[in-house]
Amino acid sequence: MRTDDDTWDITSSVGSTALLVAAARALEAGKSNPVAGDAFAEVFCRAAGGDWTALLDGRAPEHRLMSDWGRAFIDFQAARTRYFDDYFRHAARAGARQIVVLAAGLDSRAYRLGWPAGTRVFELDQPRVLDFKRSVLTDYGATPRAERIEVPVDLREDWPKALQDNGFDPTAPSAWIAEGLLVYLPAASQQQLFAGIDALSAPRSQVAVEDSRPMDTAAFEEHRDRELAAGEDVNFFSLAYNQRHEPAEDWFTGRGWRAAATPLNALLAELGRPVPDNASDAGQMTGSITLVSAIKAA
Image 1 (tube, rainbow, N blue to C red):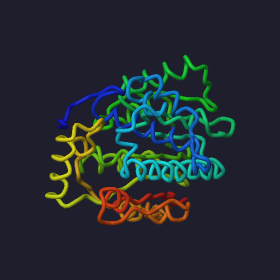
Image 2 (cartoon, one colour; image 1 turned 90 degrees about the horizontal axis):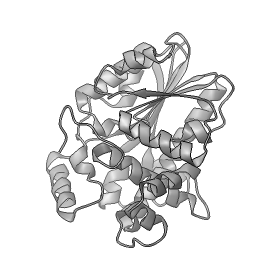
Image 3 (spheres, helix red, strand yellow; image 1 turned 180 degrees about the horizontal axis):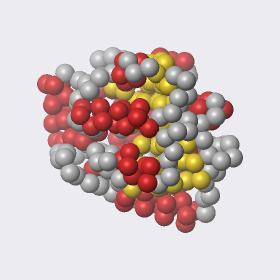
Image 4 (spheres, rainbow, N blue to C red; image 1 turned 90 degrees about the vertical axis):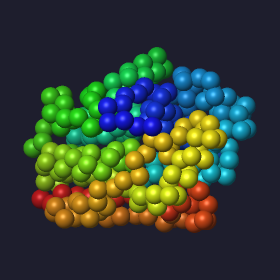
C-alpha cells in the first residue's frame, strides 16, 4: 500500500509500472502493424532481466501481458504512446524548445524523437529510476537527440523549484507531459501539479495529460483485493489512489488554456485497434481514460 513518503526504484512500487509499460511497448513494436515505435523499450526490459526477458523471448505464457487484459493493455499503451509522440511533434513545430516529462520513468523520447536544434528535455522522477535509465542507455551506447537534463525529485515535493534550479526558464514557451502519472497521485497533489504547470508556463506553452475517472469505491477495492490475491507482477490497484481533484480539461480551460479531450476508446477505434467490452476489466480500464491536451493563451 502507498504512504505519503514512500519511494521506489525501477523494480518496486510505482517504478515497476514503468517496466510493464516498457514491456507493452516492446511487444507492440514486434507486431507487423505497430501504431507506435519505441526501440528502447526492449533494451530496458532486458536490462531488468528475469520475467521481463522471459516475456520478450516467449517463455512466459502465464504473464499478465499474455492474457486478454494484457493484449488490451498493449493496445492501450500503443495508442497512448502514439498520442503523446504526435503531441510533442506538434509542440516542437509550434516552437516549444523546453520539454518537461513529469514522472519520466522509462520514457525514451529524448532519444527517439527528432527534436529541433536547441531543444532541452527535462526529465523529472525518483533518483533511482533516473539512475537506472541513464545507466542502461549509456551501456547500450544511446545518445539523446536533444539536451537531456535529469531532475531527481519526488513530484509530491517542491518540484517547480528543482526544475528551475536545473535551468528551466518560465518566460519561454514549454511543452509538458503527464503520462501515466495522475492516478498515482492523491487529489491534492494533482491540484499542486496542475498549478505548478500553469505557474511555470509562458504564453503559447502546451500540456498533455492522461486523465482518468475514478472507479466506484467498492468496485475499486474488489479489484485491489483480487489483484493482491492473484499475486500479480504489478499491483495497479494497490498503487493507485482512485482520486481526481478535477477533470484536467475543465481545470486548464478554467484558467485560460484552450483544451481538447480525446477518449482513449475513440483513439483505439481511430487507430484500428479493438475497443474492449465495457463490462470487462480491460473495458473498465480503457473506458475511464481520456487524453487531454491544452495550449495556454498568448
